Image (cartoon, rainbow, N blue to C red; front, side, top):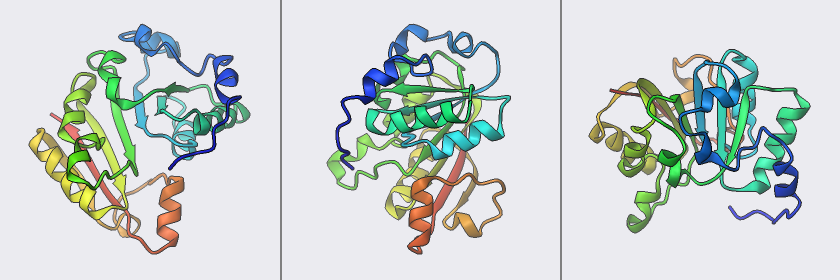
Length: 211
């Protein structure tokens, strides 16, 4: 979805130390960025940040990194965490293609991928954040035993992603094609999740473990 340009967003973001523009300079040193050794969770495609904000509030003993390439949505996340005095979130304005240049081995304990672009055309499927091409990137920094949680409204993407996980050696922990009527506890909803659910669309979910 294309958003209206907000030329004022980046200058405002650059004034705040919670937004990290020189991401690769911190490779291997993200604990120092947060000032503690707590586990770090990474959300890819955070949007305006409802999900990551709630996670951070509920888990003050953990650290969270929110990644998105659109400053037009990240500026709202930044304002939200500042309004709520949330200190355990850092924002990365970048694309996911270059993550292996940003994080070192075992730096990330969990990855969240919520309602990513399904890229339905065959020639575009390698752009999917659950594709084996990206899973190989995550292997460079997601710790052994670390989890990846995935949500989508798209049935084809869901089925393909289960295959990607299997082919990449990830162990399935839990899956469901109807998240809101499943046994999963403590689900944190995203903006898209609320929207699709209100339209009667079932939410698909999978949790997998890196072996």
